[in-house]
Length: 346
Ligand code: NAP
Ligand code: ZN
Ligand code: ZN
Image 1 (cartoon, rainbow, N blue to C red):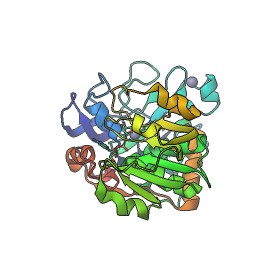
Image 2: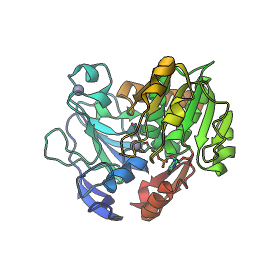
Image 3: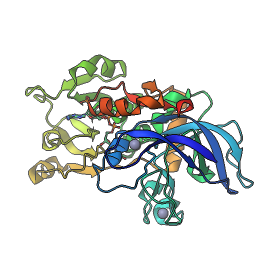
């Protein structure tokens, strides 16, 4: 299937138009016209090899939504015309205990990433969502409820599920106090979800100009982290703090804000190891944990939650020829709150 997209030809190079061929439909595959593709900060980390060596040419993109155009002979879950989404992985071993438990992101053999990796045949390079056509096994795609407008759905496939999953796992809800560090693509979804679940939400941000947006999204408190007095009075008061920052950060500052049995969850991945004070963990039996995206059943559950509660990402829709500028603006925390590429412009 002839496909048009955008690719990075070598590390740190700008993205450029790129044509390639996707596989013909297998029995269990669906094909879809991509409508929108979100720009996640992980795309930038990988295109610039900030997480180590990568595979080029790279077609990034793992926040993919579209409309089904063809189905293979054994497909049961999708019909032509359905709205469909694909996130951060396109396959996994399907037989390990984590896959069987619907936690494919933690597949013991390693999930098959949507790009910057090989498909399970070990030789085909997976090419991601910055493209106008897509083919995937139906088991690794999710149905997008028809009432959701697709541009605001694309970021849910990574940014959304990545915050929804830890909020559910650590049981955010009425009576809990949740902190979100960084109001970016991930962070703003964390605020929307935590508020919808009933938690009291505090945003920690290094961008004072985001306060009114944070409050509009339902956050009760907004802390400007550059202010040295900002943390006064906040010690030992949070149940859960989600760190979505894409840059290095002193997490000891935040560990001190957790109450008994509170958890600080690492979600942002700048690539450099954190320094952690053991004293900060022992006191009040605090946990430092991590969380990576979410599995397929939870992804589907999140989309139903969004459909019921009318939750979408705040997006800036761009044309493909703006991707390089969008990368720079994302790194500068200058996006409200996710860039989404209109796939008709590839
Ligand atoms: P993003 O839209 O760029 O948001 C990151 C936010 O971090 C910014 O909006 C900014 O928030 C804050 N920030 C950025 N630079 C900073 C600095 N120098 N100092 C302090 N704060 C800074 O990125 P994203 O797409 O949300 O992704 C965030 C991170 O999560 C990335 O590292 C990404 O790779 C990672 N990620 C992890 C998973 C997972 O499964 N765990 C999934 C997807 C992405 P303020 O302006 O409010 O300060
Ligand atoms: Zn992502
Ligand atoms: Zn597995």
